[in-house]
Length: 86
Image (cartoon, one colour):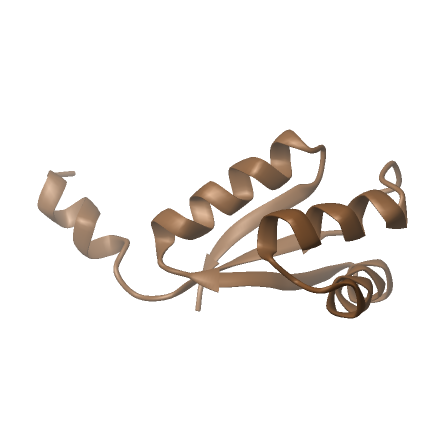
């Protein structure tokens, strides 16, 4: 795939989706969402509850490059995330 096709493919808005797991604590998930995604405490708690109950939750939305960076940081902190096109 050419560089131009790759750039065109990554245009638009993307989202980082966090998936439920059995090894991270609520406190760790909440801290990561606040630190990396910029949410306040109550917003982060709501996201953590949604991830736990619905098994997944969109926690960040932006351009592909920004989502990729946030997803990398979340993954480094042991969280399971994917990037999806909006």
